[in-house]
Length: 99
Image (cartoon, rainbow, N blue to C red; front, side):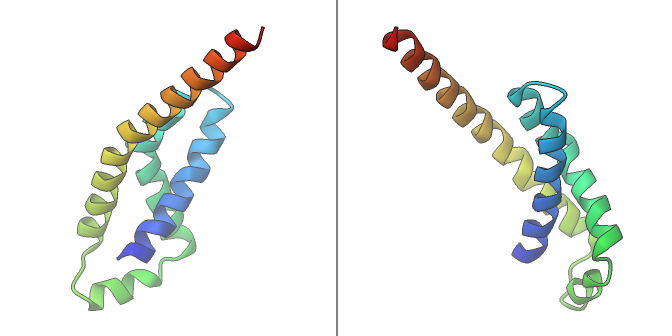
C-alpha cells in the first residue's frame, strides 16, 4: 500500500509544483492537501492502471486506497504549512539582521 501512496503522492507533488507558479507556497500546499490526491489518483489511473489489480487481489478496493491516501495527505498538509511558515520566518529574520 505504501508504494501506491508514494506513486500517487509523487503525482500530487508534481501537481503542487505546477500550482506553485500560479500562487504562493501556502496556496500550493493547501491545493496539495485538497486537490493533489485526486489529481495524483487520476494520473496514477492513467499511467499505472494495471497495478490496481495487485491491490485488489490483496483485498484493497480503489476507494479504500484513495481515501487512505487522501487522509494521509490531508494530515500532512498542515504540518507542511507550519514547516513552510517557519522556514519563511527564519529566512526573513536572517535578511533583517544581516542589514
